[in-house]
Every structure is written in C-alpha cells, then in structure tokens.
Image (tube, rainbow, N blue to C red; front, top):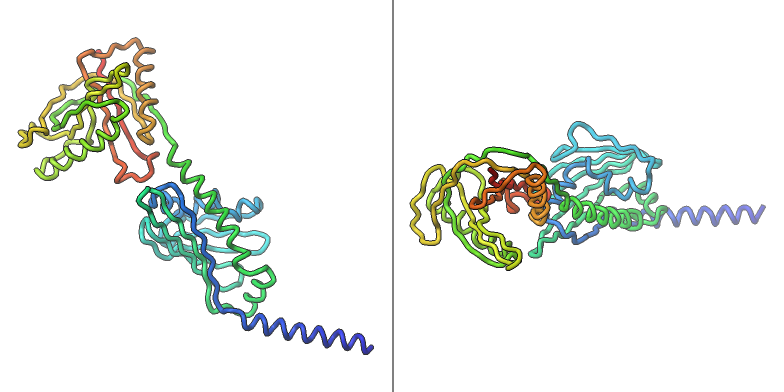
Length: 339
C-alpha cells in the first residue's frame, strides 16, 4: 500500500511538473524554410496562388494518399481556399492578402486548434532565380495546443521536414513547367503583308540570339519615341541562313499602319506584299524554334510545296519574355512563303 501511495505521489509530481513545463513554453511559434529555385518569381507565385496546384507538390498529400482534398469554386487569389481531411482531422487554408509576384498571406485552421498565419515571399535575384520563403506562425497558444506540440516533438520537427520536401517538389514542378512546348502545324495561309520599320544585321548563327536582343529593342524604342502606332506583333525576317559558313542575315521589324519616313539611318522602312505561306506556331521557349522550323520544312516536303527562292521567312512574336515570365507561354508564329 505504501508503495502504491508513493507511486501515485510520484505520478502527481510528474503531472504537476509537466503542466508547469507546458505552461511556461512560449505562447507563439514560427517555422520558416527557404529554397532557391531557378525560375522567375511570377512563375512560382502563379503556382502557389491557386490551391488547385497544391496537391501536386504538397508533402502532406504525398505522405498520405488517403487524404481527401476539397476545392471550392474559388481556389485562386484573395478569398481562394481549399480544405482537407486526414486521420488527424479537418483543415482549411484561405488566402487573405497578396502582393502580385511578391507575397501571399494565408490563414490556416486545423481541427479545433487556433488558426495560424502562413506567408509566402518570392525574392527574385539578378540571375533570374528566386528565393521562395515559406513561413507559418501562431500566437496566443492555449495550453492544449502547447501540450500537443510537445508530445509531437515541437512545431519545428512537425512542419519543417514537410516544408522542405514541398519546396523541393515545387522546385521540380516549376522548372519542368518552363520546359513544356508544343509545335502546331497550321498549314497553308495567306499573310496580309504590310509596312514595317526595321534594322538589319548579319552575324554568326551562334551569335543570333544576342544580336537580336540588341537590335529588336532599338526598333521598338524608336517606334515609341516617335509615337509610331504598331500594326501588330514584332517580327524577324530571315534573308539568309547559311549553315555551312555559320552566317545569318536578318531584320528586326515593327509593323506599322502606314509607310513611315524614318529620321535615323539605321532604322529603315520596308513593305511586305501579301503572300501565300506555310504557317507553324510554337507555344514555348525560343530554344525550341529549331524544332518548329524542322516541322515546317517537313510539312513543305511532305506536301510537295515549293518555297519562293527570293522570298524571306518570318518569325512573329505574339508576346515577349518581359510580359510572359513562363517561357512555356511564349507564342511564336513562323511564315514561310511558298508558290
């Protein structure tokens, strides 16, 4: 009997001691993880801002295939939300504020525990990569929550591994999404032609990208400075493509609504006559243009078409990397004149 009383006394002391230990624990917590991802900030922001994307990179969903995820009608942007149910209970997450491409603020509620604040920050670096910073925090924590946290090893131990794995998966998905491309053979069409202003250069094929990045902005700036109305998307005319000698001659062009008399010797005026053409559309990064041109050549050969020798081939850029952060969303149209 004395032994039992002694054991009960020790148990009481342990319970009191544990209660005191739990009570003196901090009334708040914060867990943060950062990952540098080789993708522009808007690409990451656009993925995270829509909860329909979360299941693909969520470490919790990966660890529990039986988790039930429910998406409401609005899953994207402020007031967008989603909910889930697993063996531990039901949780909800809601976006409460955003600064496009920079921050996302969310509120998470799980079971009957107090709500937590979740914050995403996207800090793009000069090399084009982005630091994705994911933080969860809570304050005014009740005794029950602190007790649960201690029994589970603390919030850092519970959350940090999931954050690290989720960011790793987000990295992989974001980078892969930038490499997606598609080449569409539109077939025979009629190009309407029209006036344009341009500048011309020749260089090695290997230097083409750098040279175009130098010339195209020059024509665009001239048009803006002189209030010239653009009649469509900018384009490149290829006058000569000599693989054997690694040489290319091309013009960077801005279409205009009328014939423009330019005031600078390097900016000239040209006119395309309407012509019959094979049209190919590339949806994706410019690095895939070679594949698009190969498809165009194959289509011409397979359909016994004949290119016009003294004509030129066009690349029309329906959008650009500055306004289209994900290269997979770039649209380039190719026109090759045929008889």
